[in-house]
Length: 244
Length: 203
Image 1 (cartoon, each protein chain N blue to C red):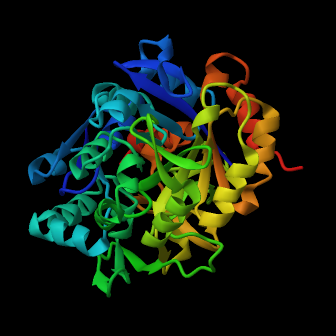
Image 2: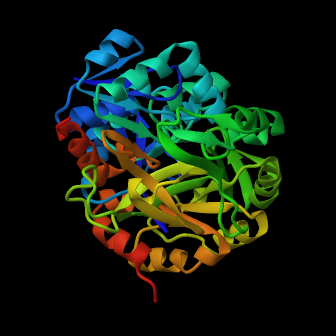
């Protein structure tokens, strides 16, 4: 299983929110590229980057910081947040992202995703499946829609999407542990490769996710736990690797 | 100076950036004169084989690459750039490559437990005599994104192999012609070591 250390960007800084709420923000670094470089040095093989300004406003806003990260590392990274137009996606891939994550725009109907898959292929387009109580959350998690994560995931899988980042919004930034059963259900019922996110903060959590590899869980995104020192990258990488 | 050939595909900045990290200045260019003046040449690439070859032909760059090889300037093809060094590819029909390395580019035919494209980190096994992999540990992880793989006629040119459902050649070396199916510019410290080795080659 792959460990994805997360870098959440707001106003060019590396921050963490709690449950996606802007009122609950901690700034961890004003130099996200340094953070990225450190994650690579610690052994990370992927990075997960979120443009929070983009997620809330619908327009990418941290391109400079993302370009700086691309300059700082030589490992692949994925970017999500505010990618609502083909040109946004193109710009992000051009900036050095290996994959982009599409959330809100996937909910609005299959056409946009179809177009992206035609243009860029399914190795570069990842579905952002954000859920609160099983329902899909959009617009920087401010809104939920009347569709379950599993319904949306299935629909997108049929269009050709292969991989999804599944985030349990209610767990994000709380270090309270992932909603394992929900993650498993999404993986099994959608047929997508699932990168789990939200609340993952201990070796036990990672072990539990790793044991769901056969169900299609391929990755774990870790944010706050790394920044707060609750979990080290070395521990996370070791837990993702060891077989029982 | 390392010339990175620009034929209108993909993100070349990441290749340039990686070379800069290991101390080798490079230039992204499609100018024949600059390419032929360089002491190393890199042919990167993403996208389809036919599109890549078409672009090279249209820009007159295949002739330049033949000249690079003739002058024995070390040449490194990355991903599609490696595949185009081969004789033919079966991607979307049958297409002719630059025939610098006799062999075929074939599509992965794997059972459904293997997803295609092969995307992600995978281990490599290294042939002993490789210059590109000098001091790279066998079993190192590198980063792949591809649906097709190369099959050289001459096993002697295989510099590294990898497994993805089948065993396939993930790097070649023939004189001063080098190729990697994986992306060294996205392969962390191992990738940087490989690029440093290339940069330090004596032609």
